[in-house]
Length: 160
Ligand code: THU
Image (cartoon, rainbow, N blue to C red):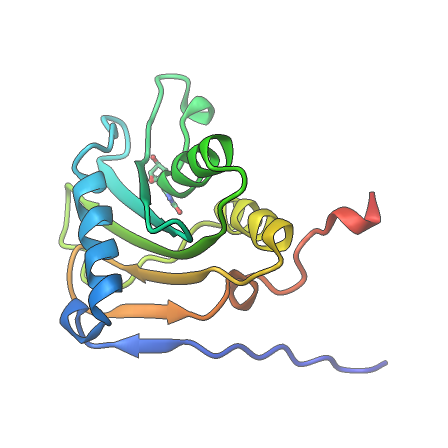
């Protein structure tokens, strides 16, 4: 038996105002996108914004459905839009924010497992890391240099 240790490094910022200006702007886009969440069932609003290498920002929010599994997270709404409409552009940075209609979401909310897998696909496709920044409705922001830091042991297409 051999023990394998997996380590990851994240940066924590006390507030959005500590972020570089371009990331603050990206987070503002995510906050704006969050307002368009359609979340009558969970009452949980998520916004995602992606900065492309052509300097455009693509954003998305979670879209729910009465048939619950038919809904989609904000991250995948945004990243699939980017993949569909800007297939040749690289995705440089992604900002995420989430707020509950039931309570104050003060802690940073990381992307769910399914979204991590989806983001990882594009990181591998473009052969360049995507910086991920995530927060709640307010307060601390966590930065990961790459999606790979958030998803060790991802499922890779090389095994297919
Ligand atoms: N949600 C996201 O949009 N992103 C995540 O990473 C986690 C969850 C959405 C899906 C659903 O509409 C609501 O939040 C509650 O799960």
